[in-house]
Length: 230
Image (cartoon, rainbow, N blue to C red; front, side):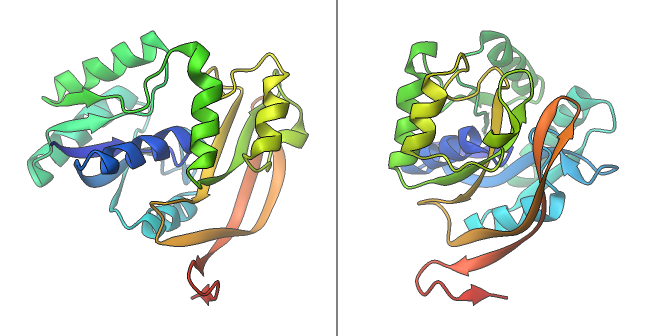
């Protein structure tokens, strides 16, 4: 078993990677997300940083936000090196699915930080539909926070990932898991969440060719009593 940090987007891939690591009894010590402090959002999915922190709090793991400031790879390696010294981690886990180029880059970054690279959700491309179905069947609740305007229209943004979503994405030319950037997600509940997140206020905007869910506020919902937690 390894002591692991998880490269965190807030979406389904990294969330499922975390779930599998925990199922395999690895010790996950923290989540790591690359962010833009200037924009106050994370790079991967454009989630506001205060909302991303709420998600980590709902899961119950420390969240380390790394400001890239234009030097993404340098910042990531420096942060991984620091986390290795602070927490004694052996590995960094990524939510990559089947893109070989992404995997190679992640492996190189991990190696430069002196860490093993783990890929808990690595699949063959033709297994994407099955993985999406597994994610939903496990009880995760996720919404589309970004949809590429080149692949999907604005109606996809804010959609819940469920059986209907699987059917609809299956008849498009998009990867069912959105691995080519067709869509991105934000997970609000699941078996690793101590509390459920409820989005209180959001808008859909078009930004740099992406239909984006601009989340303004969220709140915790106690999963046992469904009482609003302050």
